[in-house]
Image (cartoon, rainbow, N blue to C red):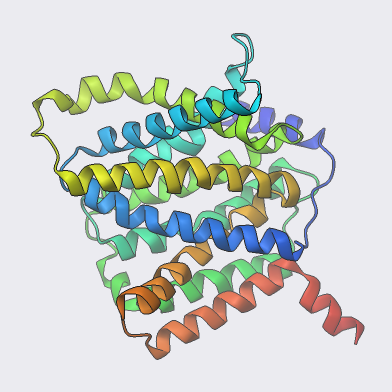
Length: 316
């Protein structure tokens, strides 16, 4: 861990400073990403009903990698040569192979809502990792307060009652927390790819993730012994790969290059908001008072982290 942190710190310190306050276009991309990734919990839950977790993780990254490699070739975006894959392997491990496997396995043992709450700790870990590993994304009182307010909003919105399940299925909960930590290190490590096309980075990490996961699936899941999945499972896996992964990571790396690791991983606060609003608009689900309270807390947290509203108030 110590050696890995040193590599991240050295790499990130050599990069130009990241902007802290995000312009409107970045916020629009962040909201779009939250919608795509909000659906991933739903799609993964359906897929893992009929397929083993590691198989779902491999299917997600392999299908997405195939789509992006084809798109990269069609648009003339060069992929890494045989000597340039090492950073993509590290990123693929931290950003895909490890967290996807941990979350998908965790979701087979705990409710999706609790998994989403644990996933929402990602910005908490990210501000800590970024504080020690970078020179331009340091921890400030406003940023820490904003992250805490955002996390509290997620808990209130999804339902504090789910916290009663804390302490049950500890291994599954630790797996989801481990995924959040992995995402935090991935967000900071990925800063080294600034200046590279988002498609090259997204395709490269997904190809590397596929190679990393394939042997595990063969050894652990042995999918040839699993009954053939139905239409719903295939549809969920394809949506998970094409929308939540291929398209999602194109947007993710675009935001990361423009706004930094701490800002892009704020998406985990917005994912529950997107899921609840989509359920209300498309499925006729009830919008409760706690949902509005939670969204308000998230809005306050995001404003504190972004910084501009507080600066405007201070200058008024």
